[in-house]
Image (cartoon, rainbow, N blue to C red):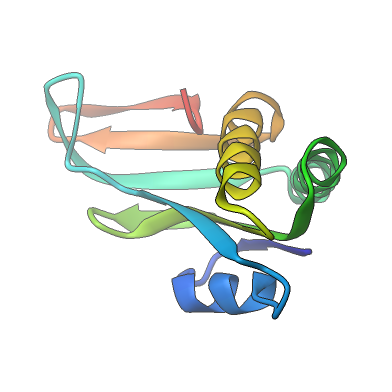
Length: 137
C-alpha cells in the first residue's frame, strides 16, 4: 500500500510501480487532472488544502476497505495539495489484482470514497473570483 499526500507533482509511473507484482494480471489506474472550466466558467488554477493527519488516515482506511472487499494485491492513493494549474495531476489511484474486474471495482470504490470522506478542500480560482468547494464534488 502506498498512501501519499504531497505538495510536489505526482508521478503516475511511481504509483504503477508501487502496486506492480508478478501475481497481478491487471492494474487499473485513475488519474484526476485539473480541467480548464467548471460549470461554464474558466478556471485559472486550483488550490488544494487538507487536514493531513486525518486525510492520510482516511486514505489508509479506503485502501484497507478495498482490500477487504476485493481480492486486491496492492493499492496506491496519492493526492496533491497546494496550487495546481490546468493539466496538473491532482489525484492518482492505482490498484493491482489477479484479474481486471477486482482492480476496476476497487479503483472506482477508492476514488468515490475519497471524494466522500477525505478532508481535502479545493479553491477554484476563476477570472472573476474564487470559491472553496469539496475537493471532489
